[in-house]
Image (cartoon, rainbow, N blue to C red; front, side, top):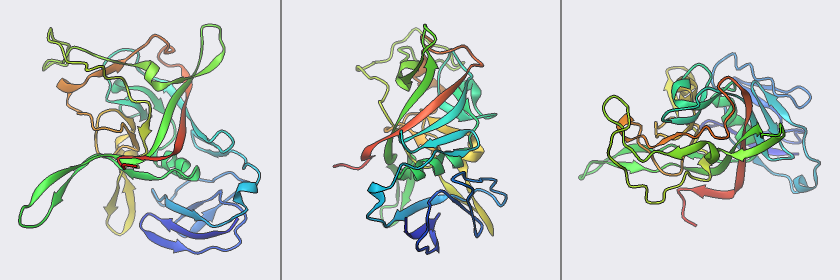
Length: 289
């Protein structure tokens, strides 16, 4: 397979010809490869792919590549999915996230994952999924200077929990099976009030958006992948730095949270499960077709 160009973050760093395998990670001038297994120590910091441009007409005839393993996750090319090691950390309460990085926001996420958000980003890129941006506000210059809301965008990714059913059989359930809508708004203490919210038949979205977090300049050193700092992996609320988010912005204020855990099919807290990310066919959320 010939790789004509590799773009790292926002700069072209290499031009490679007759490269036999794309299973690699670029790290401060070095390519790490080992029998299809990505060595991802990232000694020098959070540096990731932003784009890989493949130029090989025979790619479609190539055999399916072996799975690639990163700490806490597996990229499965045959199933076109990324499997994350996850642990159930909440079975009741309001949600700001579906998944957080381990040791970050377990009190408001259904599961925590072992894999770093940056590695999850890289894994999706290896499946040829394009990231966009999280929801954000941008200052527009000019005579009429103002702030404008920028919606989230990026390729669509379906999310599943791989769990055991009542018969002990391993099955795949869409994440929406584990989320329900609360019809009572919260008061100042974060408790449901006697008021009612209009539901408008709103169901939990069928997919997330690969927003891709944000890279922040860090002086002369490598830029910081912000989701690695915040732990925002799969966000319901819009934080502006999440790796994946819902297709439409959701408030992060406690008084406006409307989604909570649905424990009906959820294993008990502490159970280890698989969180599966499966990109849909190319269709970018936030971009009209």
